[in-house]
Image (tube, rainbow, N blue to C red; front, side, top):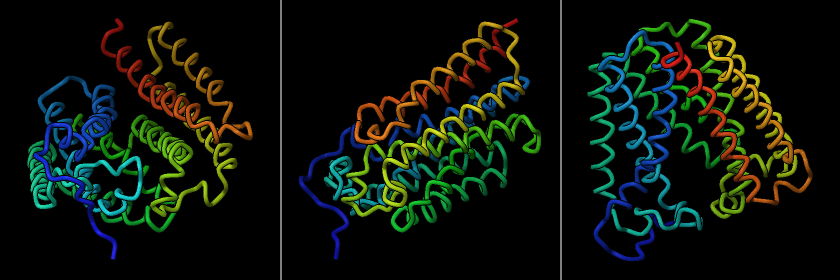
Length: 300
């Protein structure tokens, strides 16, 4: 029977351990698409904006910690995750559960104030989708990326609702589609970068299904789809500033060019290059919407 944790040493948890347990930096990033959606759709910035992004951040912290609690045994098998606090024992399992309940509970209370029971139900769906469907599915299927990508749209849904903007409006639908599409190549680039780790923990991944070289080629196609989706978003929020419009178009062409090596037969072996493309893709996804927000609020 696999041990659920390897207690290398018993030591008092420090701030870095709590940051690692909750994936605080990644959880903060999860909040950003929602914040940007609010700024695109809202007529003014109200208290609901600050409460919504706070609730999303706390929920992301909580479900990330719950994910590590669920995978603490598998984390011990991978070099990338073997030093996490639950594996090392710097945070106890009981302590982690207390943190998880506090974060998810606190997030739900705040969201109830903003959106009522509908917000709490959406929060509950995040826990179900992420911790009860996506996390177990990762161990059995390489296609877990698709329900995982749905999760990335939920902050946008919540903040759009907080901005009193219709979820049926085409402008919302295109930006939700953009965030969904982006996450597919985002995940697959991680597979190319960390395939050895995933194999050690016996996680099924698309590189095992189609081959790493084919996955590299397919990922480039999905990056192009991400760019097309981004330009669809731009078509609904056409910048008043020709400078911003030119920057967004130029950045789109730049990403297509810098990602082109994925079509080469040996790029998947170059982890450094894959990491660089990964960062460029994420920066592009952020920059497109940030520029649209800047154009809406600051350009007169």
